[in-house]
Length: 429
Ligand code: AMP
Image (cartoon, rainbow, N blue to C red; front, side, top):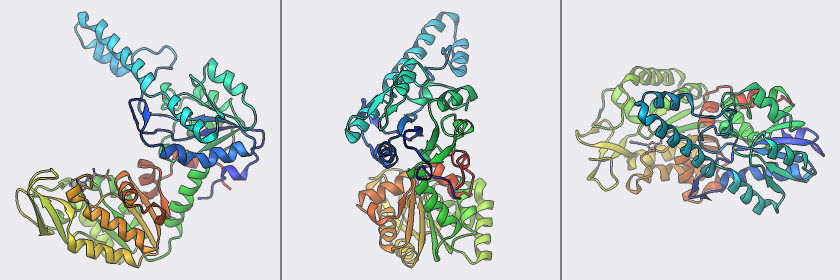
């Protein structure tokens, strides 16, 4: 996959529309982590430095579509109101509209504009709408080396519906489209895909990095290639396992999903997480790995708890021998040794998903040990998923990882070998 980046096109004096992922966590109107903002800065700073006029766009959360023409209630809300006795309908309508107004306050991108200005020395103005009068005037007034951030693009329902007229209106602001929002690249929305039908489209530096690292690992990996997958459910990672089994030398499975593989082979797992409807699939994946000579490592032992609670009674036991009344919440010490050994000699490592309930301090050891092993491996390492990334960062290992992916769902779909519409639509080199 070889897509043109912002550095492959002439942007001097051009109007450039940049789709970012500014979907930052907020509490009471205050940004609690601005990692996504700082992640977007290299592309924005590059463009401003080149003398481009920059139009920034992002979504935040899942708002009511307040800016949609004729906005009233959504279809779902209308149905809910209609199902109520007539006397209650007016109050229910009012409550939904009040929620929409609340969304506008809570999910506005204004705090993001303020934070951008702290980093960019006041070069960013904020438009209080998307394709309305304020945005149009502020885009028209842009000078070279200045930027405007549009209001939350999901305030308009046509964004997620990939409405053609909406995409065209966004495109009319600019000469070039730059997609730098990897986290939404798996969605064909107006500001990620629709817009590419109207103006030339290239990727930003963040997406360029995702493609270089993840694409490189999938297309041309250095061996031994080790994939480590964890997290709650097998069903979420089936596509990834199926795609990677043809490429890797070793697959390591931890977390809740491991118990389905163990139970499918007749092991006792107490009341650990289990997807019985995936037994057949689990067995076929094990058979496929054997046939291809891929090492498929499952936990050898577990740390178990009586209740799903950090402080509940706990015990260690061998895999497949979890007593009734207990559930596995982390991998055990033997497994940590085995997994660490397997990661040691790797030249390429992909890790997605925790080895246990890493949110519970008593069940975080397995995830921490894997984070340590990946950091120590010296391999080209790619880490994705909130819990794995959190473990890497908590241990201060971020600079030992070659690439920390910025997309949850998008990163999994990429590893599944799927075409991401927001990337497929960009120009090839
Ligand atoms: P995912 O989003 O699929 O990567 O899954 C992450 C979630 O899996 C985290 O919230 C973990 O608490 C959960 N998880 C990992 N291992 C287990 C386990 N053994 N039992 C229950 N939940 C688990």
